[in-house]
Structures are given as C-alpha cells and as structure tokens.
Image 1 (cartoon, rainbow, N blue to C red):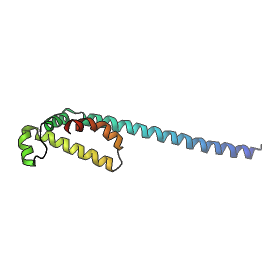
Image 2 (cartoon, helix red, strand yellow):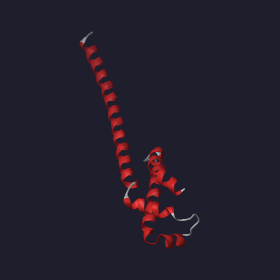
Image 3 (spheres, rainbow, N blue to C red):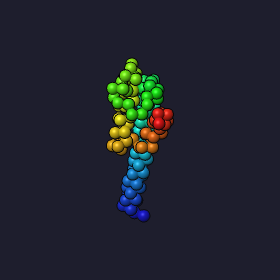
Image 4 (cartoon, helix red, strand yellow):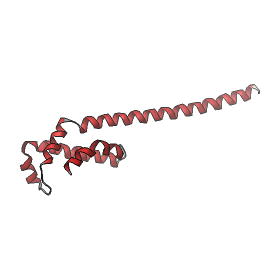
Length: 116
C-alpha cells in the first residue's frame, strides 16, 4: 500500500466516521427534544389551573350554550377557558407536526376520558 492509498483510505474512513457520529448526534438531539417536549407537556397538562378547569367541566351537561356554560361555571369560567385554549394549542402543535399524536394522546387522553 502506497502512501497515497493510505491517505485516501484514511480520508474515506474519517468521512464515514464523521457521518456516523453526526447521525448519532442528530438522534441524541431528537431524543432530548422529545424528552423536553414531554416534560413541558406534563407541566402544562397537569397544572392546578388546568385541573380546576377540567373538574369544573365534569358537572356541565352536554349541549350547553356559551351563556349557560358561563352561568354554570361562575368563578371557574376562566379555568374552563384555560382548558379550551390549552387543548386547542395542543391540537395545533399536533397538526403542524411539532408533537407526535401519540405523545399528545398519552398526556391528554385520561382527562378527556373523564369528561366523555
């Protein structure tokens, strides 16, 4: 093997090694992002304010108009709106592909099962 062949081989191995390392780093970054998203969702969807809104909505019958809903909820009206806006935002993030649907289902499935 000549010095030129050895240099070519070492360059090819360096490029391949760099690509493998880059792919591994991208995978680690994606996993870290997924973990951050999950932690933030847990903080948001299990907050006392959101829980208060969900509990307030448990006793509301189906088919209430906006006026009836506001009258029934009274002081808890703002908590209910927090539930609506949070779930709407979560839906938008899923629609845009920012969050996997399975992740959103894992974090929001139980509270909505209670309401249904």
